[in-house]
Image (tube, rainbow, N blue to C red; front, side):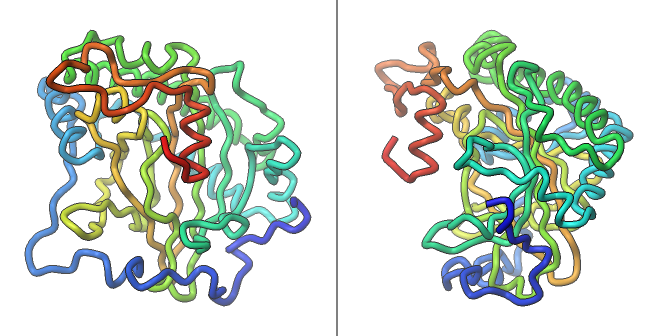
Length: 330
């Protein structure tokens, strides 16, 4: 597979298998009404009301942006620098880290041109991903040696992500009437997996026909994402797609499937997709926070009552993931 990897960056035309069906075309399905689009919540984490605001956003939206989050601007810029430089390397150098699931190499560099999306359509993106925590889940052989500083930047950022997500879990737990540590414990405690991904969406010849990422909710507990300055993230609300207006310096937090399950539907996973640009390269750096593969997640017992029976089955995360990827009933 590695030798045959085709990158969207190398394409000069728009392959027909990337063209979306009429009901998915970005231009036709993105909000363009006369009224103001709904504004995704922006939450100041230094505010005494931040926890209440997060709870409301998780219930109503499934997505919010956080500012004053404590992640230094220098850590964000260094993470972005090494990511940009990796995708600027020659294709042969990136190929050294190509994923190959058939041989068990499920982390590394890849392209969505190799994978069919909904209805057999493919999406316009290259990517790199690997675990960054805990140490037992990390395989440094799939981390790029170039550019210089890649490992240091990712390890530093991971430290900030572990601190931040602990705070997010605490406040979201309290919003459900649970102890602050309940959510993190329910997802695996110190064994929770942190997966760093870089999404790379180069200029697309016909962006009106393509998507960078097809509509989906995240498998994870939650996702913390930093984008570059090129817009493209959209969320589905009130029957159409809405652009996320990014606040510089903010981090975007997505509620994922596992939090929706744990909360017994009180919090909701956000349905989102990504559009692409004709002139500019869009990039994003999401961290997916996941339970260990053998860990069982279900509705929290204190959130299941006669009035609110369990909406979801308790299931090992690996089994949930397999069913979702293969579009099987949960």
